[in-house]
Length: 386
Image (cartoon, rainbow, N blue to C red; front, side, top):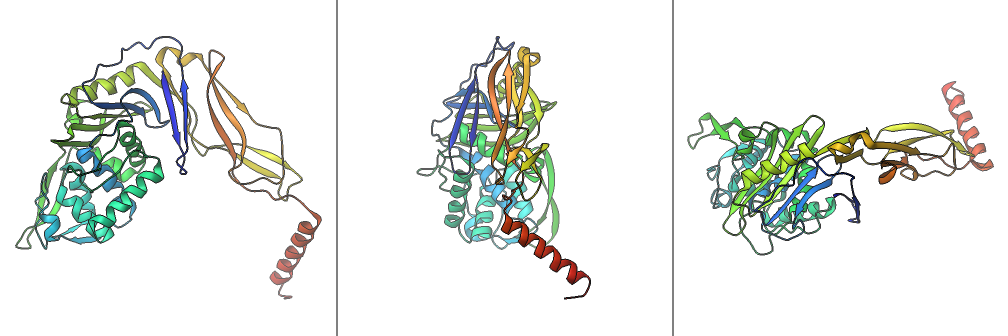
């Protein structure tokens, strides 16, 4: 069974489980993780799960959220002055020192590759003025994208009261983060150099090697973030891409995290295929509008028009587009005007809404007269009469 989970900004949750026919060729892996998930990046469909909503300590996988907030700030080229509080942060470290000057971009790189707790605090202080203020931003962001079972207490993941997330939420946050090209590029980097000013002010290159060993162990791997604390145990959020399909795997409190993550990702590629019909935002057609101030409205695919199915059912998929021949005004932008329906052997398994790409006002005598008057005024103005 595969589950497509969609979350809106209003935090509504629609759970559509699709039972695929036939038996997947690959057997689901047996995991030692306390919480785990395998998710398709494009559709958000859950392909395998183990305690996906159990609240657990996320360790340094926390830094996925810290990084995406920093990247989305648009301030990566700013210079950051390292405080004594940041430099003194315990745990994994970039070995920052008080008074050091470094760019936000380099801090984010060190945060994701070397898992620098000191970098996390420096980022928080620079962007929000304090760790407390930044944590508030983290929690608002988690809620806004639908990670409703997550609560952060710090930007780095060291054990703290009520610092908890779930396998599902971490996959969902990662899915959001991987849609950002800068984030995706950094987490796929095995090794890089950043510019580093030593205590004497001398510039030198500092080598950073990614803590994510899966980048070397699995050919298709392209991310994402490790994490380990005594409370959380070994954790790993990973991603891999093969052909047109990208998968996200999360294992929490898993002493076989490398093996289990590889097994999860390989299982996803071997057992499932991504059937793609239309990209999100695609204009399928334009519909005539009856009694409208303008004559046409664009019909746009609201969400990815894709479906993950068992490999052997791929050829059994059919797609139906349900749209009216015309639509009556008024039409509101974002209004549902049709849907794409996916079938497997004539059984409907998924629908994707088609929405209006533009608003069309209803045509009335007063609006027509006003338009004619405005057109006349514009012509007279262009002729220099007014």
